[in-house]
Structure formats: structure tokens, C-alpha cells
Amino acid sequence: MGGQLGKVQTVLGLVEPKQLGFTQTHEHVLVNLLPEPLRKEYVGEPITLENVGYLRRNWLNNPHNLSLTSEADAIDELKRYKSSGGGAIVEMTPIGTARDPEALARVSLAAGVHVVMGTSFYNAAFHPAEIQNLSEEGIARIFVRDIMDGADGAGVRAGIVGEIGLDWPLYESETRVLRAGALAQADTGAALNIHPGRAPEAPLDAIRIVKEAGGNPERTVMSHVERTLFNLDEMLRLAETGCYLEFDLFGQEWSYYPLSDIDMPNDATRVDYLIGLIGHGYKDKLLVSQDICHKTQLARYGGDGYSHILDNVLPIMRRKGMSNEDIEAVTVRNPAKMLTFV
Ligand SMILES: [Zn+2]
Image (spheres, rainbow, N blue to C red):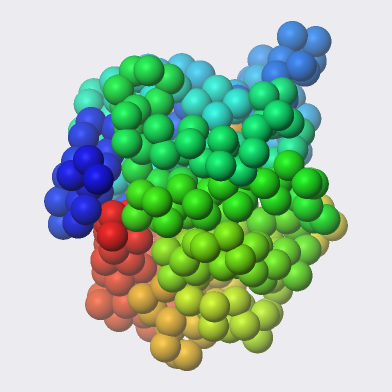
């Protein structure tokens, strides 16, 4: 080990878990959601007051909206998060979607917010060509190197494996990447974050694969629970595996979801699910975030910014009866525990 045991590894180095404070465990600060081959040919209109309403709803329909590449914007937005009480964020941008370790370190330093970077590959459409020729051990070596030695030769180290992108049904290469993630988790003691396919059976199937590969479900975070499972019983079945359930689409307040034909719940319904799971004893396995990944979610482009949970959701949690201790667990204690190397 490189001294990570018992610590959290940020892009600026190791910190004590207690230093993190309020933490959103699934965000993107610098990312490009257009697959590489499309970036040159897919050109759209710049974002204006005339089209921002359309784009907030149909956020996929403009390439400008799908890239967060301005460090200055990122610093501004994270400063807003900090002034609302934010202490840390987990930056889940996979390799191949414009992850930029050195820029993340600069942004973290300038904004005064702890940033924990992930190491992963997203779903098959984003897999770099090299993945096709790598064994699961070969892929795991990339993840372990990012955590132990630093990513892209820059010395900036990842602090978590994820988000590992999966489709439903899984592509063969996605199964290999997920098994590699489980190997890297077992090898380093880091947590593992999974972006499951959009089907109710996908999360349990992913946990099965993690277990078969020697990973630990207790150290695994299932992202995007609320666009994948649609009732408390399904969520309880997932919670029984011991994994973290991450409600990370806070701020998506409309029922429409452009990526699949579902009824997206709103923030109040997300809080109801949290309360239901707390009532069944799973308070210590819940995480919240906003998964910001396009421009119209930023304050600068008319969105809520990273401070939406702090500013707007904590009052909903209190109104619906979550205690201060419940809120502290979900937003401070659980993220710190999850991010601590074991
Ligand atoms: Zn994400």
C-alpha cells in the first residue's frame, strides 16, 4: 500500500476522512459525453436564453451542452458549492470521456473543495480501442496504477474505481471491465462505483459479477438507483446485498428522461425512498448526488449548480422528517466511510 489505508485519496493527496465534510459522491466537473468519433462532426448552436429551456429538458440534443471543459467555469461552480456548505465531491468521469487529472487538481486547489477522482471505463460506446485486446487483469492494472502511482503519468492519483459503465444486456467488454474493477477494488482497498444498465435486473446482476470476480459488495456503490428501480421492494432487494444505494439524480425534477422510457421521480420522491430505506435499517448505505454532466445543469447556464442539494433538498429532507442525524449520515458520514481505503 502507498499509505492510503484509513485515508481518503484526493487529487491533492491523502486526507483524513473527517476533513471531507458534506460530500456529493457522483459528479462530473470536467467531462465530454460525446463519444470521441462524433466530437468533430456533431456541431450545434451555442447555448442561449432562447434555447436553454429546450435544452434543460432535451439535454442530449446539443453537443455544446454535453461538454464541461472550462476550468474557469468549474472553479466558479465549485466555489458556489463551497459557499453553500460543500466540502468534497467525487468526480466520476471515466477514461475516454475527457477525464483530466491535472486540471482537476488545479480546480480543486483554486475552489478549495476536496475532489476525489475516479478511474474507470464507461460503457462500450466509450471504450478506447485498446480495451478489446486487454484481459481483465490488464484492465485492472490501469485502475491500480491510477490509484497507486497516478493517472496519465501526472502523479495525480484516483481515490475510487468508477463509474464503471454498463449497458443492458452487457457487452462482453463491459463484463471484463467490471471484473477488472472488482479486482482493483480487492487489490487497493478502494471503493467501486457502478453505472448499471437501464433495466431493473441490471444492479443485482452487476453485484453478482463483482462477487464472482472477488470484489466486495459492501465496498460497492450502485449509481443511478432512481432511474433503474421504481419501488421500495426492488431497492430493498438491492440493499440486502450490502452495497451502497446512490440517489444521484437530484435536481432532475421532470418526469421525462431522454435516455429511456421511464417516469423519472422528482426530488421529493427521492427523499421518500431514502426515508423508506432508513426505516428498514439502511441509513448507513445511502448516498446522494446530482450527477452534473451537462452545461444547463450549471448555475452559469441557468441550472441549479452543484449546491442544489444543500440549498433546496436539505429543507425537503427536514420537512419530511429526516433528522439531522439522518442527514449527517447520508451526506457526511457515509461518503467518508465509503471513500476510506480499507
Ligand atoms: Zn456520472
